[in-house]
Structures are given as C-alpha cells and as structure tokens.
Length: 250
Image 1 (cartoon, rainbow, N blue to C red):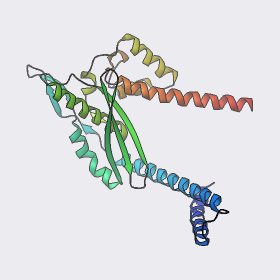
Image 2 (image 1 turned 30 degrees about the horizontal axis):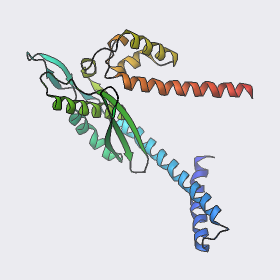
Image 3 (image 1 turned 180 degrees about the horizontal axis):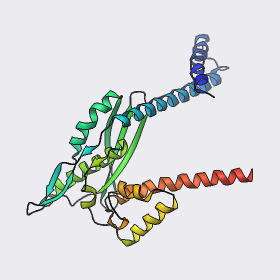
Image 4 (image 1 turned 90 degrees about the horizontal axis):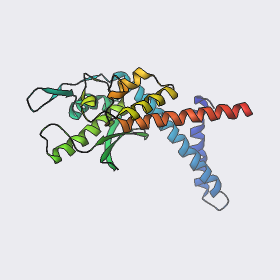
C-alpha cells in the first residue's frame, strides 16, 4: 500500500470507528470494533515511527561534532587523557534536540561482574521512542578518587557513552575510551576480529567506534557494548540467510 493510500485510509478508519460508537456497542459489533481499534492503533504507531525517523534524520544533519577539552591529570599533574564531559555534550545537543521535538531520559541497571548499564531513551513528540545501552565497570576512576567518586564517574561515563551512541555523536580528540579500563586480552580481541569479519562489518569503522587502533587495544569498558552490537549484526545476518534459503526452496 502506498503512503498516499495509507494517508487516505486513516480518516476512513476513524470514521468507521465513530459510526460504530454512534450506533452503540453491541454483542454483534464488538468484534468489529476491536479490529478497528487495533488497526487504528497500528496506523498511529507507524505514523509516529515515521515522524521519529524524519525528525532524527534532520537532527543528524544539524548535530556538530563535540571537542574533548577536559583533561584528567596523573598524580604528578601531567595529562592522563582528555574527554568531553556529559554536561558539555548535553549543552551542545540540547538546543538541537528541542528544535526537532526530541527529549532524552536515562535509567540504569546493574550487571554481574561489577558493571553498570546506562539506558538512554530518545523520545519524540510524535509518540515514538528508542533506547540505547552503554555498559561500564564500576570502580576505578581518576587517580586519587574515592569509591563514591569513582562510582559517580562510572555512572556519568555510562550516560555519556549511551547518549553519544544514541545520537551518533562524534567526539573529536576523545581518548577517554582508550585510557579507562584494561585491554580485553588476546582471546577476546581475536574473537571480536573474527566476528567483525564474519558479519561483513568495516574493520576500520569498527575500530574507530571502539576507540582503538587495533583489536588488542580495545578497552574492557567497551567490550559489552561492542559484543552486543555484533550480536545484533549476527542475528540480522542469520535472518537474511534463512530468508534466502527459504526463498530457494520455494
């Protein structure tokens, strides 16, 4: 059905609903009413998703990259790494979000192994929303930080990562991802590299997204998010292969 046909069909569904209601709900027409309500709800949801996608495309064209300007020092005062704080990123993107009818909210949950996940939910005024997760290890933190400060830093770091992933924000000169956490190790590095090749992903783009120049340099802070990304790609590839096989048998 074309978009024009769908646009013409929506008022018809609303009109049919109103006619059924005007006649009164009876045992004979309750099934038809339920079917019409279900159809109307699906059409409304589809329209909300379409509005979201159109507004998100416009949002992407208006978002600028963010510079990493905040330095974290070593104990001797020398720079350890630079990053773009969550507050700075929000200050950059909030006006663009509002102009395009978006708002963001955050929730969090805990995983086994001492990790926390921040969930960034991007909501549009049309009614559609989309969520993105980012996991970090609890503990560690900048040199000299207390446990409470380290936990707070982990939460903020997770929010920052979830927000950047949800909006596809590019942070220029951000070496935070490489400096926090330890390398994932040879076995995990080789596994990620094989999976990237298997799903047909772009190696250079994946490493840039991971904040590393080589698979052996990927931080264990980033591994859960990268693992989940590859799982989605693997699921999508398996679905395409199954669809192709089904088509051949037909």
